[in-house]
Image 1: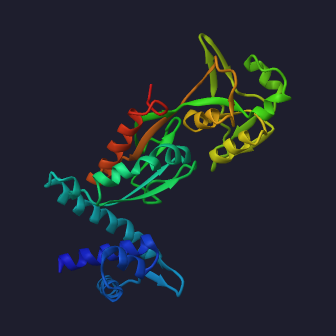
Image 2: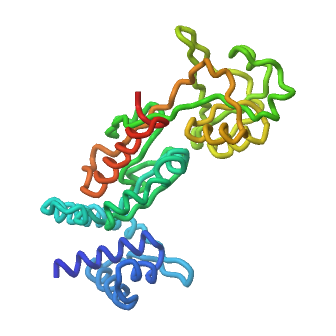
Image 3: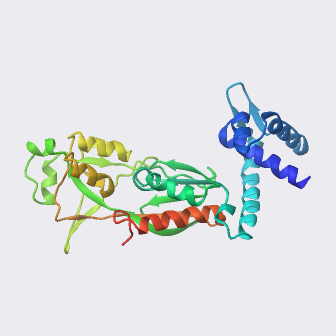
Length: 305
């Protein structure tokens, strides 16, 4: 009976995650009728309705959403227990939900994921790539990579890397632009700014040259809250902007961007791995966090100072 309940809980959680009975059944290797029967039995046992069913979508009820969070924790504990008694990498299995800045995902993590999946074939990743700050507990996220200072006292925070930045403009923009030999000259240029989605806070990195420093608090002609759009606008000749070095270098090599004020160094953005104090790292989450930490350590564009 205990094993049946665990399997029913696993089926329910998968339905919530994929949004359909058919998708859950396929991912679990079960017949759709089997999964449907498990959910009916679970609802009968609990005496509550867990799911809203329509012809297009399956979603949890309020009670189902609360049950999902607790059931997912139970299943993770069971999976972690099984993995802890085995030395095999294949013993680490289950789903890992992680959020990270879009630039980190697109430029570093996704291109290297084949290595991770080869080493951990039974770990299934659910990766969110955006610049917004998510509520890890409310959204059921295992861990997150965050840029900048992390001030939330409810989160464990470990620095694992950094985003190196470079100040760039397109060659077309620079042809007719005013001279640019010092940071003060930026006041005579069109500057592209970045604001964090969610809080609309402006990002103002500093520039350094020896003991000199300069804050990029200059007039901005256009703001973006998406890093990709910010870079695309720079390539399109709309102005001068700071771009992640990992993204800018190929564009510089192709002649699409030109580094400006190269003798000045831009302050990097610190990258931290965070997770709630209330949640221990399961074997599968630890496998991913150790891998992504080593990935940054081995890359000149992302290695922490």
